[in-house]
Length: 232
Image (cartoon, rainbow, N blue to C red; front, top):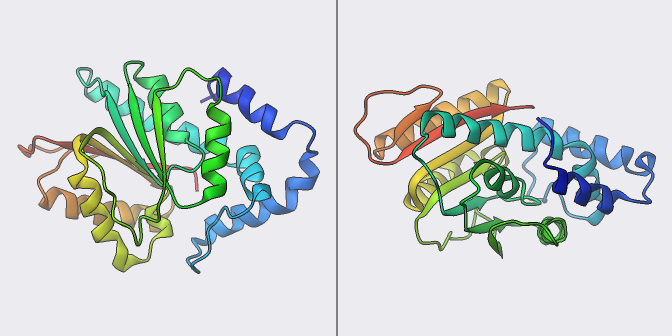
């Protein structure tokens, strides 16, 4: 799935004049860090060079996975037209772009991101774009409380793998309490990612969630969630 034209143009502007060879080593180290699912207390994206390498190497696949997840929700719930969204671990705003592309009536989004560099990158990409009104908040979901009124759409992509196992239940509980309608969780397409999805599914179903994909069931829960695996 291709990036939206305006996002592609914004990425090209951010990378303009920077030889990709200069980003090669950073991109390789960043990809290795993600594949190893390293949890050493350091941010995966802690410098501008990291952010640029992410845009060049990881953003297209991440966007495709998130956008495909939203498309599955739209197919299963054609009546679902979210007006508000919350993205936890927003990175450079990937889910915002994907949600705006999927649901043109989306009006407002809260984006929570621990890395100030990622936030600055996301804000720069959005300049001049016709996106929903966006509120950015620097916060670490592993330690901070997500102070948000319930939103129609809540998304968390490639974040559970960055959390210590003991932190995940609390984070999932926060996300579910912030979900007015639908929660979408995306994890890497690895054995570990699948196990995290299964654990999250169990916890959220016990909290009253109704799974709409990939394993729908007959729960009477009023709120729904969608799980997905993306590229490793």
